[in-house]
Length: 389
Image (cartoon, rainbow, N blue to C red):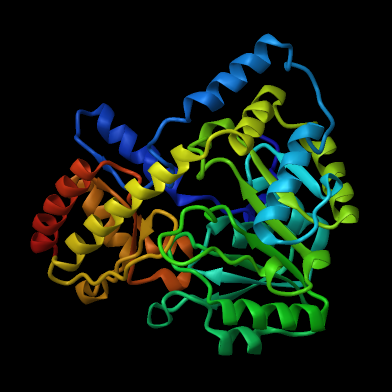
């Protein structure tokens, strides 16, 4: 077999899908597996959104469209971001992609050169570090510390800024911790980025899954719009993971560059799916409120249950649908504990180290699962940990 490209050695993966595959294999062997590994709402896509896609199919939305997206969807996204972030956004600053991950990939590809440095949260979504490495840049982790509510360690952040810093990646509410960045920290980050002329990639995919307070975007706090890539999508808010629909809001010149990457990679995003996305933004929003209310009940249930298990302590997440309990008392690598829980207790969960080195000593549970299964998982977990050596 001919050799593969060396650059592929730089590209990482996402452990959630690896654990899911292993869990599914165990299920095929007859095992009863409780799934707390995958970050996917377990709700169905709302009916009015599905009907919009069916209608679009019947009306002929089965062909190519402009690479950055169907004009009416770009207009709707621009209006939505303008209204929610209180900043002026034009459709020309919006790019629609098949899922939100391409905005990470294309944004970093378009803005970061080999040898540049990119600051990112750790523990954090693993694709950040993967793509930074892939483009030949240097990933600079900023720890999200439990004692700070999983907000940035601002002292480390400010010391991490160098003349080589090209981009700062933010995620709030966060995966995997469920924490949020403090408004005061966001303001300081914005000040530094403005002063040093650094790109910001603000991952706001969980913006509507928030349980306390109000969502705050860095774009609403300071004049950084002309150097910010705002990432969002439809997967989490509208339970549309399989539809693969995301978008970025960015300066017009950068949108043109990202569009060029789209043309070279996937031509455009599925047209009838974009019409469903238009309905998601413009149609009734009551399904979102119901989903978040249910997530809050599940959050309270799983946090309370985890904190009653000897050896575990768990903060209350303020957003997203993950808990990140501290399991350091077991004095074993988190990956070993996660493997044990899957093999011995039938609980699929992720090691904190799946999200970076600062995730050691933690596990991530996605509570996108029923309250019944959460109760079942907590019982199995307590019994299994009592046997863990």
